[in-house]
Amino acid sequence: MNDDVLRVDGLTRRFGDVVANDDVSLRVRPGAVVGLLGHNGAGKTTFVSQMVGLLRPDAGSVRLGGVDAVAEPATARRYVALQPQSQAPIDGLTPRSAIEMSGRIRGLSPSAARAAAESLADELDIGEWLDRRALPESRGLSGGIRRLTAFAMAVAAPTPLVILDEPTNDIDAARRRLLWQAVRRRGDAGAGVLLVTHNVAEAERIVDDLVVLHRGKVVAAGSPARLRGTTGSDLRLDLQFAPDAVDLEAADGGPLPFPTHRTVRSGRRVLLTVPTDAAAAAVTWAATLREREQIDGYALGPATLEDAYLALTSSGVDEPEPARTGTEAAHV
Image (tube, rainbow, N blue to C red; front, side, top):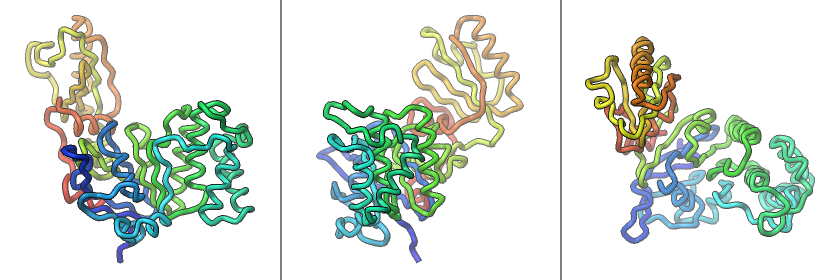
């Protein structure tokens, strides 16, 4: 039995000669939070637009709750709530009225919609602004409060699938934490969540699986631990090179005096993933480079998903760890 709330197979969308989505496959099960991760311009929002019938794919299939979303977009949309990347058009409304209206459209009774607005205001800490009217030209409510209101509108009434496109844009750090917790609660309560983001560090904290999109293609998929591609004890040596010494061997005159699992270059920044037992040698070497003023600074810490993400989406990579690609991505 297929219980996926979202299943996408071989999705392709072109704009003239530009292939925005190239044979993309993924699935979201009930209760799972799946992150769709990629740089700006990777094809994420184009992908989302096809999930809700705003764009028609050139090839491939989309099924929402078992319904063919390409053939029956109106029926399929009943299964999904979307928070788009753009701000919700709520000028003239208060957050309370916008959330209640969204809940009523989704079938809530007036009392249930009122209760949902109150509950979400508490959950997201926006009660102070609940009855403040949004005005044109971004007056009345800040961008962050508008963004949190849009999230509340999307989740006011339960749906099998929630799609969130860059939901934390403009939101302050404290309320971002509240929003991530709210997203995780929806997954734990049984909804499938597709979280579209380019924020690697924050996504890693709440997702069950990740799909990495790069130039329209799925380049890897799996759990954060799998994509990290390292043991739990691996460390990252982060080097900030001086402008005239951006090559590791040129900086030290020879090969590295310690083993590495992965090397990623991004501008003047170099990230080395090293085993724990090489930490002392790595720090001694980096300190020597710093004394010679061949690097501006360095830091040693736990290996992160960001390292793997940069390795997957950057051309300046040596010996990247293997990751699932192609048809394997369909089984996330």
